[in-house]
Length: 412
Image 1 (cartoon, rainbow, N blue to C red):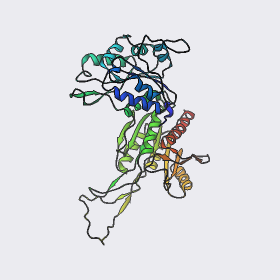
Image 2: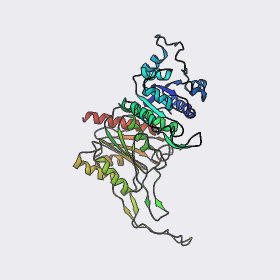
Image 3: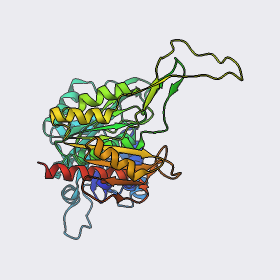
Image 4: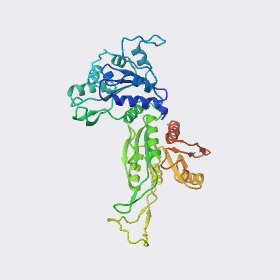
């Protein structure tokens, strides 16, 4: 899937001697599919595990390994200078203990370490090593040196090593590595230095220890909004009930289940927020009494009557709190309707004093709940409704976040 942030970005991927090099091949493929221009540098050790042909086939570009090879650059630059000058990011994944030591001490005896010295772009390190090597004082000292110089460290995972030992030192999976790349490239975006809160997922209200009331909201749109805000450089708090979805790299997640939990977490986070994007589908009602024991089925012809009570209106509560604290500076709500979409969305916009409403028709089979695409209409005070075509939820998220960023600039 194409990622706007990565489109035509020059990424140098350094791969060192580690069994985890096979994950680098998958990462190179994912970066290329996302739209990046990926130049791979393989050390001699890396080629013991993977071949240049593998990466060339996955990226569609030449693979580099020999610091002495003649370079075909039309400007006459040698390889390490050309790669270092043109890169938007240098990512070394996996980064072996040996290469980390070389980088920390400024050694330049292969093409990768040469390029690292010549590059002026951000350096992202993903260590991977066996046994107790990661926690060894020498490795930790070398990593600390590199971090102090401005490198960003991707903390390795814990688990089983190829040797059969266990501990910290495993290379994270490619989707997580891709998230770190996005975080590194997005830090200087339009929302850099801004605090953005996003709510996601559908809340659930317990009837008894087994059953609950909920809705069909998957949380995909909210999580896409969190990722888009991160791509724009924001510090993101994601308040989500969608436990099945991963947390975007860089976001601070607050897990909630009920409407009351959503209310408390959102009010607390909104007090310091520049923007709140309320994408969560909060239950309007809950059982008036939660049963402590499982309700038993009585008979095939005997029904069950339940008393329901309204839950708190989270968005209205935030709007009222906004009067006191002046935050969030920009407030976005969602209107999921099955009829009279624009009328009800406009009513929500006015009644809750929102800056933007994202309205979507939940009766559409190809958009909205539980799918990857959405078709929405944007409503803002004093502006005609803006109907957007069917697009991936990531595209909707980028457009909404761009609207938020533009408004915050105007209000600065």
